[in-house]
Length: 94
Length: 248
Image 1 (tube, rainbow over the protein chains, first blue to last red):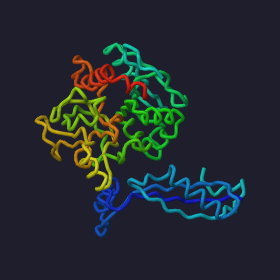
Image 2: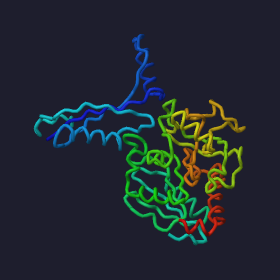
Image 3: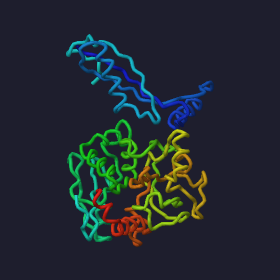
């Protein structure tokens, strides 16, 4: 069956994030004076096939470990759900 | 592979998006009189060679992370085997990023702290060159060299324990410095931890550095300090004991 994983890759705490700091400065300069911190990251939506939830979970774990996040400076978290959409209305935006 | 050639033979690895391979090839052939071979990333063998270079550029478009996809290119199995057998490997700029992603060197390279791409001449302080004799054997501790940098993601990061281990084992071999050789925050062009510009592996045969020695190998283009690295390699290959050759 088909699964959809939304993988969030974010920087480990303590790793400087100049992009996030710059976005934070921009928000404050727009008047959002209470913004104290912005951390940037990546969102990856992955559609794939797996027999069951356990197999899907194992696949995503492996994808993150091997490629999607570098443990030197990143951590990955994800949400996994069965993708009930048909081919005519894919969940993954084109 | 055999290592009896009078002229050094260097394999230059080319990924989709690599941009410095022609500069390395020019220096190898036209400046140094070496032999070179461009090796495509889908190849599985390096061929007969005495050293391997991973040049700068934007392998696979730098997508996901710099070097993250390149490390899975088929040629990297051969590069890893060459390195683990003690063969000299240099990764410059994007090549350094690939080496860290491949686990051949510790740490990672991240976006410059000021978020700008930085292309400039940069002074470097050489430290503990004996830790990396193949590439730095002609240099002395405390030497200053001037090489171009050209990168947007050159900020070296590693956890404190890794940084401490690199220092304790004399594996930090190049640091960003001012013209007088002082390692200062102002001389650091990208926010790298402890001013690190280049490191070597535990065995001392793999060098990763953000600067571009191949772009500083002819006085006519502004500097020739890069030749000191290539000269080191040539001398190292000539002087290497026969026993070491057989191991390769």
